Each structure stands twice: as structure tokens, then as C-alpha cells.
Amino acid sequence: MQQQLDLRLAEAIAPYAGERGAIIPALQQIQKSLGYLSKEAITQVARFFKMSESEVFGVATFYAQFRFTPPAEHSVKVCLGTACHVRGGERIMDAIKRELGIESGNTTDDNKFGVERVACFGSCALAPVVVVDDKVYGRLSTSKVKPTLDKHR
Image (cartoon, rainbow, N blue to C red; front, side):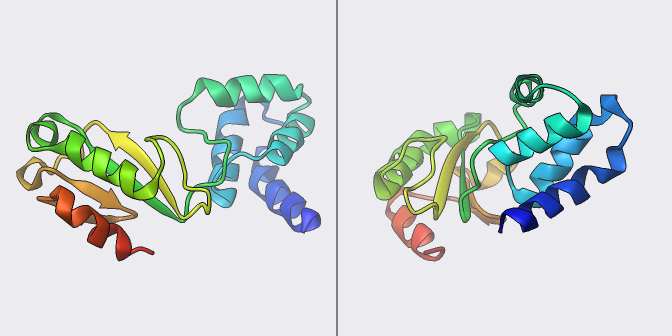
């Protein structure tokens, strides 16, 4: 298993050999491949670019695009932009948090669902909107939260 991980990491960063300034694209490629930046990935990138692990981690933590934990099987994004907020987005978020037993920005213990707040999807006519994976659920109500999540269980 570790050998497979090392090989995947090596394949992801190989195109950036000799380009010390390419650490961000290398990290992006690893995250695209693995879904997140693992401790092992940080270590391997540090060796590859002849940097310390703390330097690599410092670069990665500077950018919001990088994650350091495996993504959930299902991503639940709740719009809290103006239209969604006015039409009950916060109540929808509260219902989702209760149903899943987690706070926004967290993942369920079984790694099945991750929940996050989003400023706007640009689907204001469908407010309030929740996106599960790539499926848009518009005009959601608190009574529709459980059935919506159940479709992904």
C-alpha cells in the first residue's frame, strides 16, 4: 500500500523536476490525484524540492485550496448567499448539521458526508440551494433535508 502511494506521488510530481518554483502546481497535482495532501505527500514533496517539510507545509497552508484530510464520500455545500439566506439558508444549514451530527467544515465519523458553507452558487432563483456532490437541490425546506441526504446514504 505504501509503495503504491509513493508511486502515485512520484508520478504526480515528476513533471516538475528541477523547477523549484513549481511547488504549488506539484501540490495541486498531488491533491488532484489523492484528494488531499497527506503527511507522506508533504514529506515526499519536501525531499523532491530539497526543502524542509515545514516549508512545504507553510506554502500549502497559505492557500485555502489545499486540504489535509481525506475528502468525504459526499460533499454537502449549503449556499448562504443573500437570496438563500433570506429564504431560509441558515435553517437548512442547521437541519443538515442536526441530521449529520456535525458542524460546518467537518466530516462525519464514517467519512460519508462533509458539510461546508458556500457564499453563492449563482442559482438565486432556486433559493435556498444545497449541492450534494454535483447535484443541485433547489427550493429546499427543512422537511426535505433528511430525504435529500438519504438519497446519498
